[in-house]
Image (cartoon, rainbow, N blue to C red; front, top):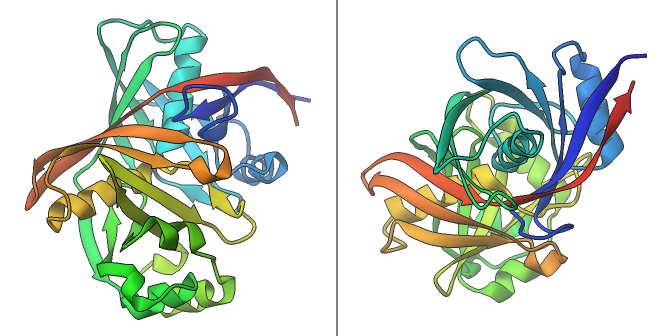
Length: 293
């Protein structure tokens, strides 16, 4: 049977078993899509990354959930880059820059020292602002009151696409509980082509940054420890709507789960003309091995 090298990486983390874990599989072009998805289910992770050849970038990767491919995701990108560095495929300079082709296109990557725990930066594309959502409906999905939500939730797409809902308090964030039936009914009613799998990213302003949660329906894990793409989309939402007064802050997620993760966020451009969102984080290679399937 074919064998594939893999690394298990905790992304957006500065210590083992924190942040968001992701399996990165090497030389994966020959692995059929159903098997890629089956591995996600086998690991019980939210996503796995598969390295494939690229004709337009230095490296290529594809990302999968437990049910489908996704065009872009932040924590698999951090995991993939850290794995490439750890295996010596990328040398750390001051800084090292290269490109990674994912399903959504080519994204620029930057890596800088220290060698033991490099800082990895990725730049999400210019966000697109879409559907505005009824805060009453969003609140009901999570067992919240309408006044727990600040402003109007909105679909923001910087490669992945999430509805961003800003909450009024940390208590509301921690107390949110996903009603899967209401989520599915709301998704089914969305009048947006291809929006049936859109998820809601809950966030609250906290100190010098943000705290957030992404609650997930089956077959995915119940909650994502750290969601890089949604973090960038949330940042764009806050900057665009004047809810933050600085283009740089620290985003945190997963602390109440015992898997603390964080990213440094930098918005590029003005609130009315955001050209990209830069995310910087660390990671830890937890396991290395060989897959046989």
